Length: 374
Image 1 (cartoon, rainbow, N blue to C red):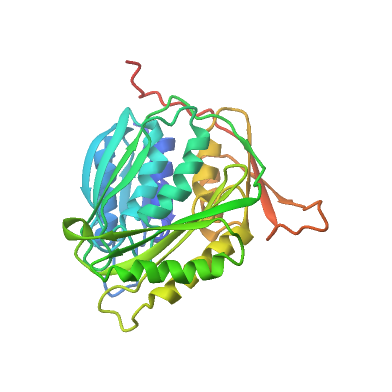
Image 2 (cartoon, rainbow, N blue to C red):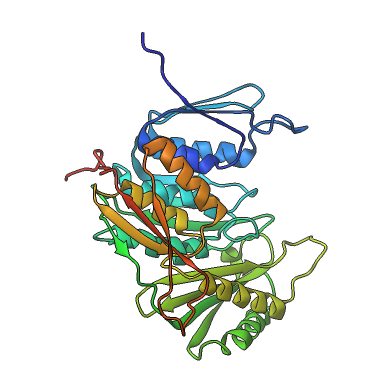
């Protein structure tokens, strides 16, 4: 009898990366020493919730958790997708879970139609809005046809009590396509959304005032929509925030966001200051530049790895620590190495922000064998 070989990891960091790559590569993993030195060792409720979500998306996955919760064994099953309903809890936002679903959705047997409930916006994770404006445009670049791709906020819920609900739909694909995306372009306009729940309607206008005061010094074409959620759609906690997206003349989207302090915290957020800080974060993303912002870098690298056996190139800004670790994990699971080159700016009179990185790799030719042909 051949003993099953597990890939071994230690610690609770990067759990999502390891589970996603385990499923896509069909390689089982075992994770040891999860918070084993803490007074309360083992996995947390949000990690258990993530494992339950993965169990719903797959068929035949086997998950074994030790009595102390410090050791998790995961044998991946087949991606099936379809209709999914899941409560994400209130420790992390729905965005934490969406990052996993977006990575897996194109390779399911049936198109994903997921209804997720919980927190849509907090200060810890990428919000649903940021994923919509940052990750989905990158996903579209790898898909020949994005008909049926949708991410919609039905109810907005902020920390600490949540009460939000979103719908995520994604078509399935047999294969992704190789890409050559190296033209960042120049910023032509900025769009945004100032939102608020269970606070005065004037708050969103104050956010817009603060943000536009800073952004109009940079670009004249700035428009920020307002959305004040009321009634059943406003979740269970008060809060407000801002999502901003800069669009270039080559179709690149660079996004940033900010969210108010949760109810009950010692420091109260001022809408005007929050708008200014949100604008500053967008300008930082613009300075970093590239054809994907820091939130979407890891998704771009994953889909480059899973593309056809052809060369793909993608220009990004300075690598985030999360992306650096993703590249290391891709090497471990798929034995794919990326060539990283610093892009030298040849226009001496025009310094386009931070130094850019050109990622190049040859795809593994990953094919979705589960996709229905009917």
